[in-house]
Image 1: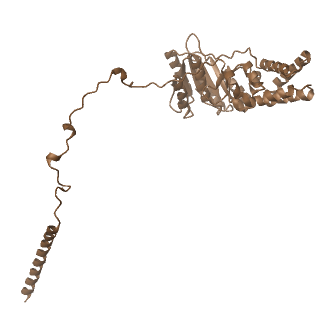
Image 2: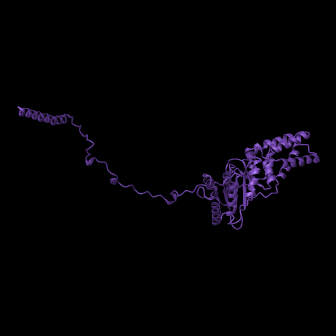
Image 3: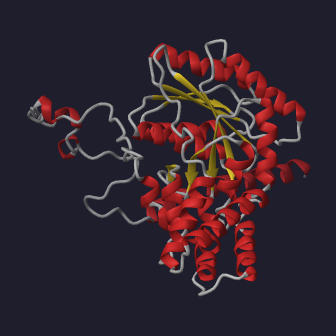
Length: 390
């Protein structure tokens, strides 16, 4: 009996297995045939219908282009061509409008009175002191002007204005040499640019380079401000605009070494001027001022520094004079560049600088444009300040 049961079980298994194999075949037969001309993804089109390949396409005929019509392989960027700086201060006189409010309109309003009494002269003194002329220069100017008005019997506004203009011009010492020492016979002239943090020193250094190029000088720039990451890039950008090479070192390099290399490069290339930008520093930091002296000493191994320009921010007023004194002790400052003069009502700071420091203001900044740095001309400056029509 047990054998019969086992046999029946085996028979059932065989029957089920056969059915499982038969059903998929029946299902495949029930699939509809593909439409005529259709192919599956696995099938390839007949060889006759295959698109021609690139290798079988007919070659294109060669095109001949004249050599002179081909574009240059390397394009040279167009350089800026700054205009010569002669008379630039006259062209920028409108930028002194804020200073005119204090030194021009204020003074002329008092001087136009029929009678100049003691109160009127005190107002004149106050106007000059407010404009940062300084107490001592103000006293001298007012005393001389009072004497001239008394002796000459001046009565009209025009007469008094002319006399005031002469006294202000005299206070600026027009006989001072304000030319930049930008050339010499036995190699490039070396100009060192110094100043405190935030005075716009690197930007002004770039503008000085434009002044030199505008006046026909060839220039090499030395990026000796190695502490501020963007300083060398900024200076190089200014130089590229006028075709001036910039000598740079790695960030944090020894400033004296970079300055030395810049002068050497200037000697090798035979340029007229080497202009060296130094790091801005606080005037009360002895170590930084000593380092500035080191830069100057290292550069002088090539020869003397011909010019040391101190950048002063006109908006700092009398504080700028204290900064200047410290720099003058560290290096021999030969000239002042007064920046941001268009942004202050205290144009008299120019007179204070001349009087207190005894060194000439050589350039003044009258705007943010690349060519808004002008050689300083005392008479043109005073005429602009006293322009009653401004």
